[in-house]
Image (cartoon, rainbow over all chains, first blue to last red; front, side, top):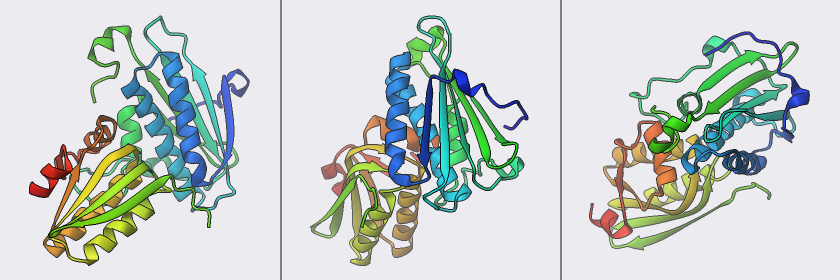
Length: 162
Length: 115
């Protein structure tokens, strides 16, 4: 999924995290996102899914964007939604200064072809409700992801059907 | 040398099988260690390799890739690879990637040794 949209209003983000493209920081980033998601009201399964999506996005930037360079900058912004009680929502934007990628080339592969690798984008799109990749104006990429749970879904574990 | 890996991997030989026990988060930092250990175990040509995931609370696509590669190597060598004692959170990612049917996944080490 791709679209052109204006840059988010960074000043309104509730969380702003800047990290280097070093894999040792992956666990801290995903644990923070998981803990915050839990406090926003997401159930355990959904918290894990949101953290997984963030982890996969960061790993893709490190591996493919920065070619495993560990001194690249990555920014993560998080906004909670203003959904009704029992219907938590979260929006996460991840940006980098890595090489820009053709949006059309960011896609899942055929899962019937079982082989190592290439699952990150599939996982992100599978677990999040909204996934938008775009090029930043000057350099790098921006990934916007959103997840919401309707109170009416909570009796099914709080996550949508795949 | 700092590698940031929050993972421990050990091996044990039980008869004609090798048990690879993993503990920690199998992410981009830990997967290379797991890959090396499984390869070492496979080089000894056991009839089966059991990967005990009971102490793994988190796995990402790099962990999946490592296990897919191990499974392909096992098939090439004519041996078995069995995953056991997987937490629901970890099983979830296998299901998302549609790999839960590709692997033999059982509940315990004993079951894995006899699967």
